[in-house]
Amino acid sequence: MSALMGVSRLFAVIGCTLYARGPERRLQRLREAACAPISSAMAYTVLDAAASRFPDYRTPEHNVLERACLQAELRAALTGLAQWPPQRWAEHPDYANGLARHWQEIHRAMVHNLGIVERTLRTLAEDGLSDADRVRLAGEIAPIARHAVDHLHGHHRLEDQSMFPQLLRAAPSLARPLNLLEADHIVLNAVLGPLERALANLPTADAPASAWDEIAKAGERVARVARRHIEDEEEIVIPAVLGVAR
Image (cartoon, rainbow, N blue to C red; front, top):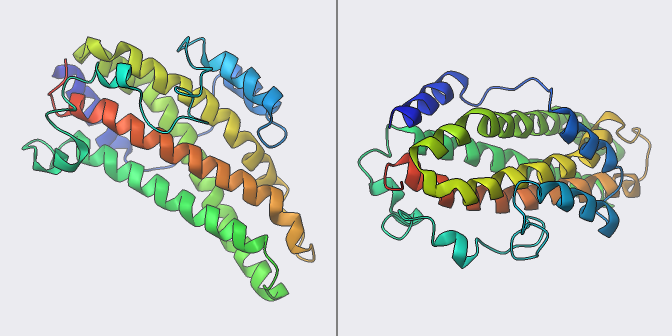
């Protein structure tokens, strides 16, 4: 458990603070390639890159753009999940004051903020708002959306570079499931690209509602993919953090 204790201390220091941007060069190139809403051609490029971490990632059953849940062969590697399913995590004696709860709180904050971004951008893209309300909402949502994007990038970097390697040392059976999560991060970085660029070039105050449609779609896509990833990630890592997977 010493490896997990190291992860816990790291998270206790960092908490939910903003992380500086600075993703690896390979992921930066992927985000630069994602200059339009997810299309078949762009998706295949991203899925090919993700498959370098998880060879079966191109299939709808595994990639985070399409999967509905973790597949049975992956769940079979999660030895603690049957004993401690999500609805029982809070009953575990190490949950309340440990890394598991802290990790989930960070995830809940991320999902909450992405939901605000998703709903507000969709509101901005619909007719019926007064010009004054559209200007107000645009000004309010821009910093929240930028925070959410920065937080996702930093959170994934922390997991890939520190948390997942320590979890793997503590629970070697998680090698393939953790590879899936790292592949998800490659896709998520690419999906974030259109939203990041749209936030850097928001429509002007006098722009019609339709000018917000593409950024609203980008926000919806990020929120949808992040929710799928986070739910699956918790099923993989929380039992290990609770010490019931090896």
